[in-house]
Image 1: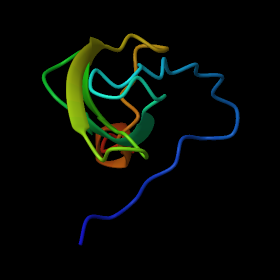
Image 2: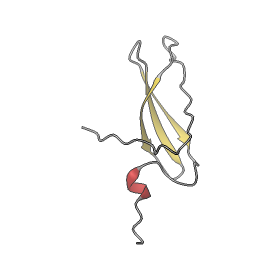
Image 3: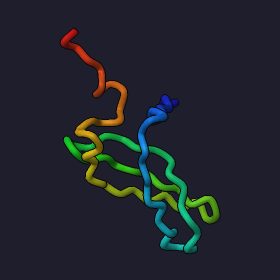
Length: 76
């Protein structure tokens, strides 16, 4: 089972919820996974017809990744 992570409360992040290409309902963000540096893969699921849609988006929020392992400070 995949482990869930949550964004910090102080991050003001607006994530566009696309319309389902099949039934046109608003899709729900299911997960965000890191791709290459500066990009994430976002997986959206349709609650009406259960279609799954993945998109790669550029992420330059404060120059940091939102994945907990990428934010560990090993230089302490």
